[in-house]
Every structure is written in C-alpha cells, then in structure tokens.
Image 1 (cartoon, rainbow, N blue to C red):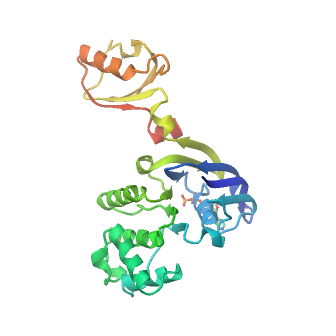
Image 2: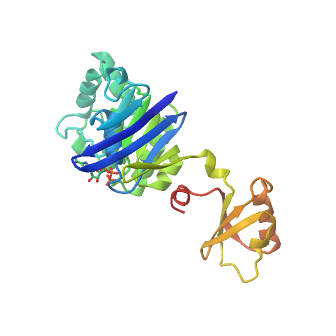
Image 3: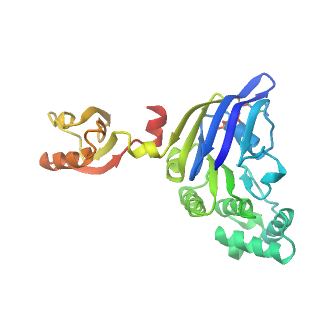
Length: 297
Ligand SMILES: Nc1ncnc2c1ncn2[C@@H]1O[C@H](COP(=O)(O)OP(=O)(O)OP(=O)(O)O)[C@@H](O)[C@H]1O
C-alpha cells in the first residue's frame, strides 16, 4: 500500500519557501524517518501530513487520502513535539474525553483508556494528574493519547527530545514494540535512534528532499567498519587484502573498508582471518555504513 505520495509539493510562508517541489512515493512496511538540519522544513511537512497546514502548491496524499480528510479519521494520529495534557485533570478523565472524541462511548471509552495506558506502562497512573508525572512518564502519556483507536500510522515529532538517556531508551523500546502493530513517521535529529527504529529515511535540506535511503542498502553496500583495540602499526597490509577497494582511517581505532562485494561477498571472513594471522585485536566489525556515514560522507 502507498503510505505517502507527494507531487510538486511546495509551502511558502510569505516570501520564505519552506518546502520546495517535493516529489515522493513511500510504500511498504517499517517506520519512516524524517531528518534534516534546523529550518529544513520537517515540521512544515509534518504539519501538512497532519492536515494542520495546507500546501501552497502541488499535492500530497497520506494512506490514499488528502491530509485532514474525514477518511483518515481513526487511521492516522500525530504527536507534536510539545504535546501536553491539561496538568489539572486526572489522566483517565482526559484520555476518556479524547476517546469519546474518537467515537468511543461510555464503557468503551474507559476500556480504550485502560488499553492505551497499559501499552505505555502507565496503568497505575490513571487517577494521577499529568503534573504528578516525570518528564519521561509524561512523554509516554502523550504517546498513549496518539494510540487511541489503534491508528495505522502515527506521526511522532522529536519523541525523545529533552529526555535523559534512560527515558529516551525506554521510549525507543516502546516505539519498537508498538511497531509490530502500526507504522510510525518519526522526525528527529538523533540519527542513531532513527537507525534503530526506521527502515526508510527521508533527508530534507532547505525545503528539498535531497536523499531517500532504505535499510536494504545499509548492509549490502560494500562497506565494512572495524574498531580496533589499539592503533595499527606500520606495514599492517590490511589495505592489500583481496577485494579491498579503499581503506579510510576514520580515527586511530576506527577503520572503514570499501570492498568489492560482488566478487568478494565473504570479505568479512577474510578480514577476520587476516586479523588473527597478523595478531591485530579488534572490538567490533560492522557490515555497511551507519546512517550518519550514508547521509554525510
Ligand atoms: N509560521 C511561519 N512563518 C514564517 N516562516 C516560517 C514559519 N514556520 C516555519 N517557517 C520557516 O520555514 C522554514 C522551515 O521551517 P520548519 O520549522 O518546517 O523547519 P524544521 O526542519 O522543522 O526545523 P527544526 O529542526 O529547527 O525544527 C524555516 O526557514 C522557517 O524559518
């Protein structure tokens, strides 16, 4: 199924062109990452997908419908970066109200509230108020409201921004677990996070879609990273191994091989043999290039 299609999509704010002629066809399984520098146009695209903003020109469809159309009711939800619940009312009361807005009536609204709170591990907090929760718990709560009605696609803007490493990890795990039931579009500046959670990456720069990557090309692109335990000595000869097309020294302990994957698909094994024969210690061997390397090298 096609998730998102855009054709010649532009958005202007006065004389500022925030999105510039975006053509896009996104389909398939897996989460989608939206990445780009500050001011690139991510929030603008996100807001258009949610139906909060309309394009200046061009067209866009999500799940086969125009953003904001009634046909998307219950299929799509969004979590803006600074989403808040009212600090003064009990969590259960507010979620039940949001469930009612989605068409759940009476007991069904309570059941749905309990279901989404259980999904984010906040069942015990149903009677608490949002201002009694930690920052991390509050983020889980806002994700819970995005899960009401079990939408197919959930848009998350910076889901771990401002969280400490433990809470950020918890949110990532939650998104990863929930990914079995629905798909996410995640806007974030955290490339490692996106690499763990997403199988497709859209890179936006000055309003243009400049790169579209999939995880398929990650491991099978003829690159191999090697982390050593100590710096290489002169005359190591690793660049002379069969199949090596290039060897970049990223840092004293970090090497990257580019190799002929077609004729030497088992290059990783040859490298391991060579490391053993030459008594070179290593910490990690990783196939492919990281998202950061693929986007910026
Ligand atoms: N309401 C607005 N009025 C005028 N210009 C705006 C408005 N919103 C965004 N812009 C401009 O549009 C461009 C894209 O902004 P947008 O917020 O979409 O970028 P972003 O990629 O989300 O940035 P960040 O990563 O910093 O959140 C920027 O040049 C920004 O200044």
